[in-house]
Length: 86
Image (cartoon, rainbow, N blue to C red; front, top):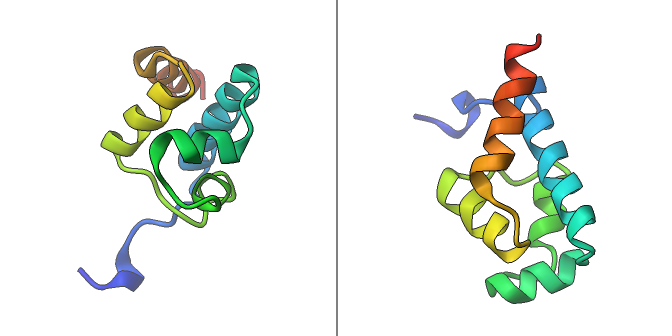
């Protein structure tokens, strides 16, 4: 698959998922840098995720939730609720 044919990270559904991730980060009272440090990622990693410049895979989503002390299942349930209410 060529890079140009990958799904856009800016689809409304993906944007909602990232919004939920950002809300979880804010609720955790952790700064982006603190989470990146916990993950061993570069300091701009989460900034790129939250701006939609970097896509998360499911393993990264779970790691990110763990770093924020957020239950990933709850986050995904919130996401599913949003999808089902459209």
